[in-house]
Image (cartoon, rainbow, N blue to C red):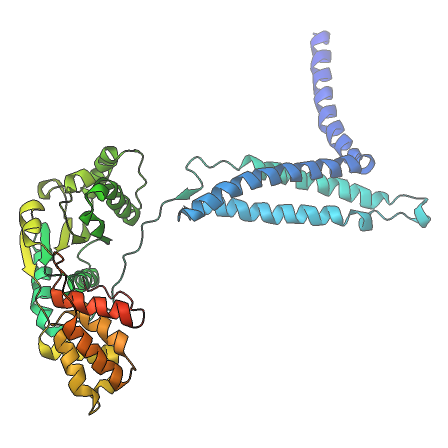
Length: 413
């Protein structure tokens, strides 16, 4: 019995001693080993700096990809900056705080104790921050692209009915593919962009993506183009592909599109684009995706691409052609000497927006003599047989390219 009491008493005494001695020993170390605490803090700051450097490389790569950095990562970087900065400032101020008394004969014990204790606390915080640098869901996430807005299109009254028809087709649940066709330069691109803007304004879809597929005129680029279309749609949806080949990505894209209601515009189609290879689901397999197709070839849209409704786009009437020309070239075309020449120039453009805008920009602010010379050359421009391009349009574009200012694309394909 006595031995048991002694054993219990000894155990209790050891524990009490441990609770008392350990803190006392740590406090004494603050005083007599403060330099070790300072060196340990410096070491841990350096280690955390290396961890921060590795993380920053990953963060920078994510930013270059256009990803959004997760809030938890940004919080960690902020805390690391703050605490590392405070630790470095603390270590730089050490000499001021340990200045000796009596001209160096007596160490400043109070300051050394405070330095050792503060260095130990800061080192513990640095270790804790380093341990928290663990992000199981990654440092970033893909952000869906915002819909591209097309506010600067030129609304033509003569095309209002066509726009309304396309919009009605977009609202019709029974129609999944819509075609817009017409010769080159008549304004198909402008119209489909106008439709995209109106659909966004009405919130008909959760997202929309416009893709120029003019590369389809080159058969060798068709397969490469499939990957481009897949990636463009994926970027709009914030989808990160896991598969490396087009067929695997098509499955991933199809699974996502079956849950989405988006508008996909494929503009300037020259040859068949297999939507199934892209991963765009058929009408029976999807929730509400709509495809708008623009081409110079009606048969391509109807027979090959399977457009349920196709809408033709015609030349501008004379009044609208003149309005567009005047708006582009400026009010100077209303002058007594210039107006009759300008009207003849507009007539040479055959009501095609691309020709009107290109020539108007080229002749803007030029002298009457230049206008007269341009009219003669436009009349005599040698036509060239190019599929889907009117001879007169070709002559206008060739003339502007060979003679005058650099003209920028206006999207009237």
